[in-house]
Amino acid sequence: MSWGTELWDQFDNLEKHTQWGIDILEKYIKFVKERTEIELSYAKQLRNLAKKYQPKKNSKEEEEYRYTACKAFLSTLNEMNDYAGQHEVISENMTSNITVELARYVQELKQERKSYFHDGRKAQQHIEICWKQLESSKRRFERDCKEADRAQQYFEKMDADINVTKADVEKARQQAQVRHQMAEDSKADYSSILQKFNHEQHEYYHTHIPNIFQKIQEMEERRIVRIGESMKTYAEVDRQVIPIIGKCLDEIVKAAESIDQKNDSQLVIEAYKSGFEPPGDIEFEDYTQPMKRTVSDNSLSNSRGEGKPELKFGGKSKGKLWPFIKKNKSPKQQKEPLSHRFNEFMTSKPKIHCFRSLKRGLSLKLGAAPEDFRNLPPEQRRKKLQQKVDELNKEIQKEMDQRDAITKMKDVYLKNPQMGDPASLDHKLTEVSQNIEKLRLEAQKFEAWLAEVEGRLPARSEQARRQSGMFDAQNPATVNSCAQDRESPDGSYTEEQSQEGEGKVLATDFDDEFDEEEPLPAIGTCKALYTFEGQNEGTISVVEGETLYVIEEDKGDGWTRIRRNEDEEGYVPTSYVEVYLDKNAKGAKTYI
Image (cartoon, rainbow, N blue to C red; front, side):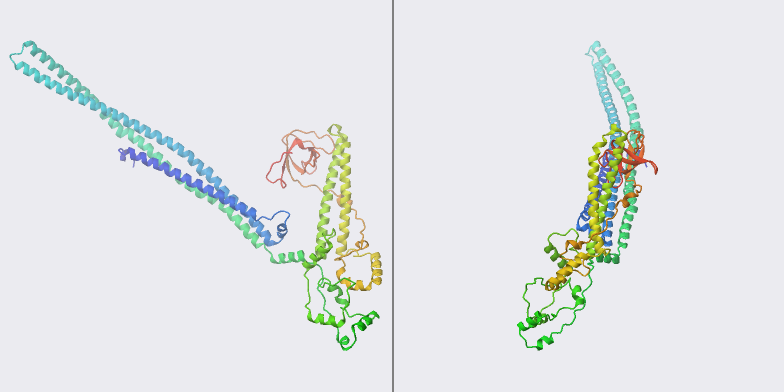
């Protein structure tokens, strides 16, 4: 069915309908645009949510993510970032494939519609002009016919009147003939214009209007097809990200399945294990014999002064009870009668302190945490010392790398003086060497403490033991009352340590640890901006535009270490290359 034949008289309605179609298309564009804004907003909220719950660097939260449950949660946060990224992809694809394309199409559609209806109005105006010409010629023909008829009647009247002169009759006859000729001319003109109008009208209704309406119909059908294709694209954009979103959800499920409750329980043990042994059984102390005696407090005190042994806890539990029992260390406290002590023992409740309270109490006594972490339980102290040793070794390695770089730079300057003054590097080289020596001494100190905790060396030297024995002989009462408070079961958790008791460790040759130099891994790539002729030892030649691996960044000396293959590596001026880091500057390009 064609609009040109079926709707030949519905020009105005077709104009309204096509405008409505464009309005529908613009409404759909607005709908998709709002959907893209929602997707962007949703993605932003998801990213902010994931960022909000990310562990803060150098905080306690970061330590908690050792546990598998926390690792799974961190994986979930990372997957939520990817999940949000897919919603951003939806927004971008809908904007580029639907919103932008349809907006351009609407502008073209408006221009096309305007052109067609302009041609239609032009055809209407032409047929209206032809109609007006026809009406004008018709009225003129009618008027001329009436004038001719009146002239004929006047001639006949004058011809019948005998009183009228022959000249007047002849004049009336000539006037009648003129009018008849004008009527004939008007008739011929009217007939010609009528034929022309009929022809124009036929062309208008059977050729021009059908062609214009056919084009409008095709335009409208293309609009309908286009909006249908856009709806399919709308669904496909969502469908394309479903596999990736499903992969994100699968990774979340995989992270959840990786949670190991046994492993987390073991981590709790490693985090809080003190290394102490549980307290032993308390031995029975017989107070019945002193109660049967009817002696005074003074006689009881005198009997103690005569060398009789004081009733006290057995030797087995002496070391075991130290973490839990707080004893009075003051040697000047007046001793109470044994009967009073028995009554107090029977009526009072024992106070057992937890390790955390014990640690807090000792920290308050000692002030700031000591350098060797002796305020911590043995196991925790060992971990802290090991961590400190690892940090110092990393710093030593870093300083040694810097020293090697300076040494190589100095060699380059010696062989190529125009590149720099070798003497200018001596001060820096000396400073780095001093830093290495300090760090090595510091590492040896912590290694000694670590060896003491791990039992590789005696906890106390013989000299310290002899001095301690002399002190015990001179002050037996003080030693007996404070022994449990001063020394832990393994001898490492003490409130007071003599300088001689810290122990000495044989010097460790750290140079052997760094003699074997392993190939450095690639940390990124670089592109040569200019050609460099590496003629000196330690340098490497590069060609402009060449891509190589970066194995060592510029450490402030103006040179970057690169590698072409396993056998070719060396230094090039940093200003000659453009560096792309893989890890430290992920996804970013840095110009050095």
